Length: 283
Ligand code: NAP
Image 1 (cartoon, rainbow, N blue to C red):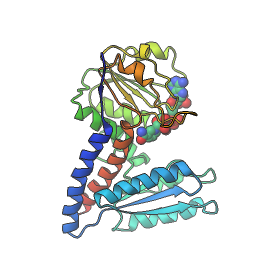
Image 2 (spheres, rainbow, N blue to C red):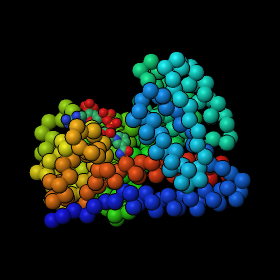
Image 3 (tube, rainbow, N blue to C red):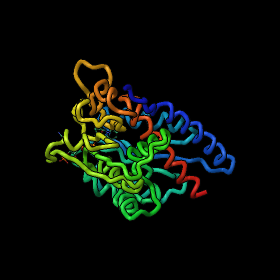
Image 4 (cartoon, helix red, strand yellow):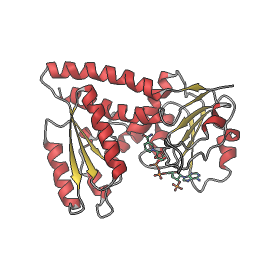
């Protein structure tokens, strides 16, 4: 068997086209959607992610700005900046790019962001709304994964889902979103015993670990859906490597996301979709 490749790039292109039309309509009504980022100035990976998100914003017609957290910038200064963004009616979404520099109290910065502008869905207010099943912005990466599941008509109802990873931005909200879709969800982490055996019970397996090719082909139940959210730098490899061994898993799974080109593009698409939705709400 060779799995259906869940093409995040193609789906993200379709989302982009839809967003472009919606932004054009907003602009006709005099609303210019705007996304602001707060990013560590000394972190090349974060700067690259934010540049990519700004490029996306440009494609769909969303304006963007960035606040660089230089080494001399304090937590209070960032919080004051965020308060300004909260109060600014021309700003619709704010992205606080993780990680902030070590001297910054990142949780305090996150909590200063108003939930109505939390386009990344990572404040406790947004996560609380997810937990309570209330409307609100959903975390961009797991939201992108649910869009991929929908696009490939994968019904989660009654399925066993295993999420490897319990981070606040990925594993935990992913588990809640799968639960919302009526899957029976197990969350695995670094202390989980017999991880391969647990994975073999999964009809839907989401790997959100950060360990290159941890998940091997013989961990996969035949016909399972494998979602690989991992992005790992590996010496000697030109592109990022996922948490799953792609070739091995693809021979057993029914569906699989590639790395790159699977979950990643849908994360950015979801961030922009949340920003545009925020602008539509304000309009
Ligand atoms: P994280 O905060 O480091 O969390 C990793 C999780 O994996 C933790 O819960 C950890 O368990 C668990 N873990 C680590 N080693 C394990 C092992 N050997 N067996 C089982 N569980 C293990 O990472 P994250 O921010 O969630 O990111 C995870 C991956 O997704 C990374 O590769 C990251 O680059 C990628 N990512 C991708 C996107 C995207 O847009 N595609 C977005 C965000 C992140 P403990 O809790 O017990 O430590």
